[in-house]
Image (cartoon, rainbow, N blue to C red):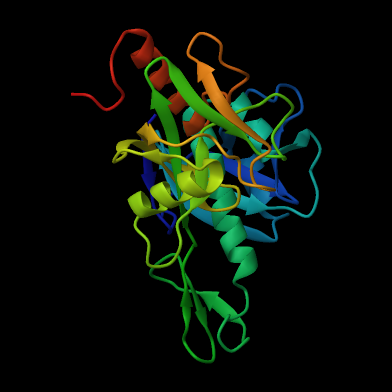
Length: 277
């Protein structure tokens, strides 16, 4: 399914549309079958829109309009579901759109007043932004870049867990980019801070929009160079080397961490090196 982003709806609405509706930041899924979030007909969409406190056009998916909506409560037939759980239950394309919808709604909620002078803001007609009615300051949907680093050496992966992870869950290292810092500089700094080791120049793997609440995760593999693991107090509960045939519980493939770890694992198992051409 091909998605075409846009911020203004077409003159002629599609007969059916995707409505990513949220109540208190939880996505509404059909009570009858949560895995079958599907496009709703025009009448149902109009009914939902009349209940919204915030509504935004996202674009079109396979010819169907897509909307993000915030509702005060769940209407009959719909069940509020934590976004992370919902994204794991639906098709990856739909999950990505649900994440986009959540970020647009969060931006709209948090920028109703100007961060410079405190005056009310209003939507810009020509782009997705909110403009201050007094000083003209413009606020766009916010993105927070973050790096993810999977450190490896032949036959082993360095995985860590934070205190907020599910019991037994380990993942790659991650951290937010600081002002004035490149993503690669962030990676070397965070790896050194979180586990005390040094790595070779990182190799790009891929990226993923991550709506918790508005991150852009940029993932790399990085070969270990030197140092023993010293977990950062408070931030890292445990970190260790795991043999590639004895991995702990790792994130599901719906997240880039799940893809990164599994794809790197397969490369190591076949004798290859992550990032090798």
